[in-house]
Picture 1 (tube, rainbow, N blue to C red):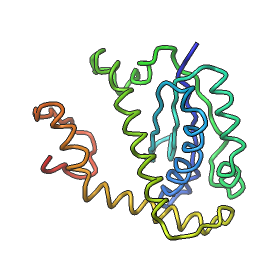
Picture 2 (picture 1 turned 180 degrees about the horizontal axis):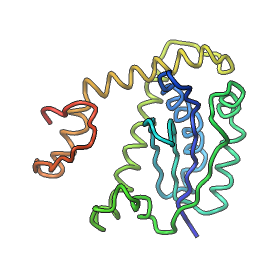
Picture 3 (picture 1 turned 90 degrees about the vertical axis):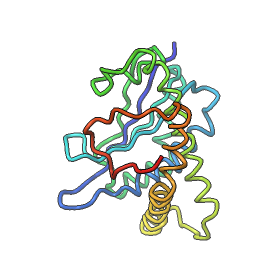
Picture 4 (picture 1 turned 45 degrees about the horizontal axis):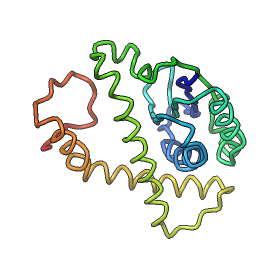
Amino acid sequence: MNKWYGFNFKINWPDNQDPKVWIDIFIIGTIVRDVISKKKSEIDLWRIHRRWPSDEHRHEVTFDCFADKETATSIEKLIRESETFKILQANNLLAGDLKKVTGGSNIHDIADDDSTRDWSEELKESWPYYINGCSEMFLFLIESLKGRSKTDVDEKNISEIESFYTELNNRISEIWQRHGSHAFFHHINAIFGYEPLLAKPRSFAGILASF
């Protein structure tokens, strides 16, 4: 039976320092890439999630996938045996071990928590397909940027890794800031017929201007 399985990476975030968000891109661009490359045919849907609020969760990267138990076990093995995971552990960049969480057996359950309690059932059923597409696009963007980079990185040198993925994260942020309004918000707005949004007072990282 297929279920949702979450693989949670808790990133070390010392007090009075900015979160090391380059680690997110390092994890997604290596571990998640390899999992999807090797296991995509065994995964029905998947998504990535990044967060670094000042709460008990702190800085986390999560990879969720809908698959059977055997596939989830093999994914965990792939993660633990990956060079990226070993490098993060060796350099004290993870705040604890990899956390594996087993969710529901309904493919729509991923959108069923406190933050989505006011969503309609139709939206909950549809949303996993939306976030899967977003996650796949984000992974492809990372791969595209890496493929165009002229920097040779020693994958065992943490200083070179940090420098490379920091620059990669900066490029992703630049693309989001310059083109996100049109490339993402405008086009999804068009799909929904340009209807106005009832925006909640949730923290937008800036006003989303002309869609």
